[in-house]
Length: 153
Image 1 (cartoon, rainbow, N blue to C red):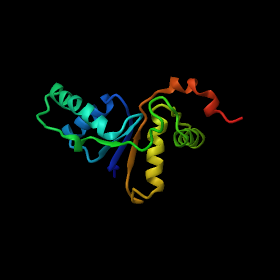
Image 2 (cartoon, helix red, strand yellow):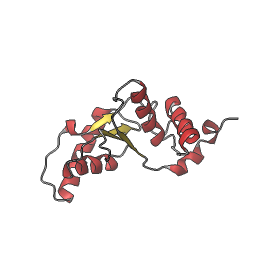
Image 3 (tube, rainbow, N blue to C red):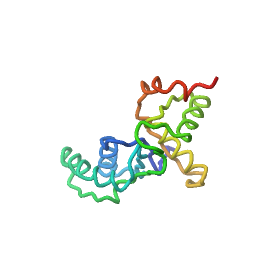
């Protein structure tokens, strides 16, 4: 039988991905909680900034629903010095996924998001039978901006 994930992890910065996923989750009664991982700002700042975008997205698709800050789940413990600044955990996540899964993440967005997911797994945030999805949102070209950080000698 098919999987039914409990959470969907993804990198989140400007809010477009977050707004679309939050609204889509509500519109289609999706069984998961969307968890955006901040690439550079605290969750409270992002929720305030993104709430109008979420409302506008719902209006755009004709969804008669209201949203509040609690509908926007943001993990903000993994962005380090901020946007565009790689983190040690993000770099470790990039190397791990490249070596074990042939999945290429980058240090600005997706590496930080995977670092959050891996930390939550290691902390026991999920049960053994729980399914979680990671949405790779791209960013491959930024890999070329950090060769000294990503290639072992």
